[in-house]
View 1: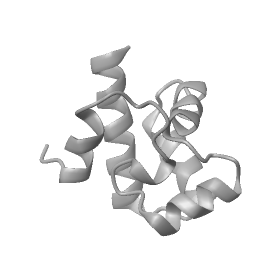
View 2: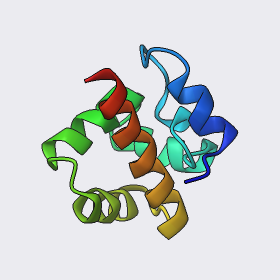
View 3: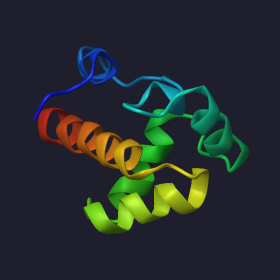
View 4: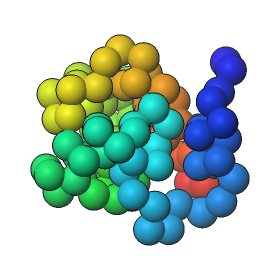
Length: 89
């Protein structure tokens, strides 16, 4: 699977306090919508990903409902978090 530069950048260093908008395909607009719903940091979105037991369908539906992510945005964000978990957990 080809990944975006943003995905590679996210994977290149610890998550730390990165904003939600730093996740693959989650830009300024979707990041702001997540922040408005108290998902302001990438690690908070990761927490939801884990609560949903890393289930792709559930996470992508949640992301669509929460911030209006389209199919590509939700797929790429899921892939980014799945890869992060595979490497760091």
